[in-house]
Image (cartoon, rainbow, N blue to C red; front, side, top):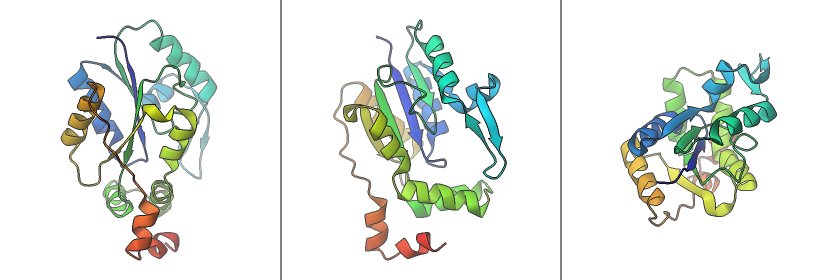
Length: 193
């Protein structure tokens, strides 16, 4: 099997870490969590106190990961919240964008004891397709696959991913949370939170 770089991205709470780990295990691939890689190698510019998050130095991180990936013959599953600028388009073979219905995402983030501000920020990002739009603007559209994890187990999502990676047909996934929320009259709940 030739080397592949598989990127897994999505809003926090969509299941990226569990999905990426299981996919790497099933493919006998290396697993590269960008967040931990950045922390381990001190590849951030500063710490944003207000948002309680590290601001990644994308240039340094991209260079360091490229040096790690280039000589490898192994398939690598890269898990990251923001892949654009980190894993360059020419290296990525497939980009899985995990999606989750906003109401379910909110519950998941509450179970993690996140602050209301962080929950609201991430639910709005998911509602507005932020991760998908960023990925679409950076990677070739043919490389993108949206997987709705709202009601799907991680195991089932990974099985779908394996089929796609084996040459199977990509699922036609038209995730449009804004339209869904508008149709069930709960959009104002998220906007006025």
